[in-house]
Image: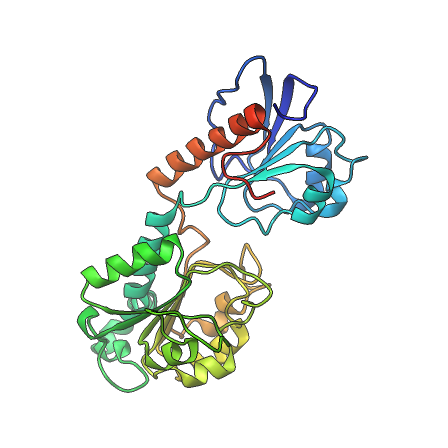
Length: 334
């Protein structure tokens, strides 16, 4: 059984507006009170979780200072409704014996499909053309040349593309089969800087040079920060398109914008940013001076789909029930 003397649990959901909390099926003799907040600002976290036995979180930060025993004396479990757990100080949880569970593979299909959506939007300059049409530019003449890449050629079709997948987890595998169904050639990247490459993989540097589309589907770790920066952008084909559905910070955003302005690559589609929520005050990718660049920006919604929410709800319930019956979430992180 979970190391918890309380059978009536206080469950605090800090971001219920992202994924609503389903009714929890707790094993006997446990009951619970749900304190549900639509969104939580950083300065509100400590007050809202001070009595919690279980905290449900998606992206709001749970840092070491709010996880100290004197601030959260009852806390025994953190349930992350997401695959990534970089919002939680895992070392602080490990030191206190706080269980942490996540919800892996729940959004796999949705995220893979979002990569394809961003690819088409960037390859065919959809956002840029939309802005130009709304601004009345079409009356001045045909706009088809806007679709041309820096190499001066019209956009390629899928059968002419080579997709390089960086990050071959669940999303990468679904993306691979989807891309092959569209007629793309697919390369799977080895680790950057690795001296050897597993069979079936392509060396990172070679993939960067050979791919016309590069999809980033990997976690943000110390060795993946600025994975794509000046050297990689300089090595890409002039008609390359990058799609990022991983995490902000994996692409050097300043280098990326400079490459687009210099016409070194053709476009960038992203769902993630170094700082979120992205706005003109904190992100170079959405400032007015990049309006003429082929950037397609979505607000960290690649996960959003009806089956994703159903999967999140199932995994959340399984994690909490598993922790109460065995002392460990079904999908343990700590």
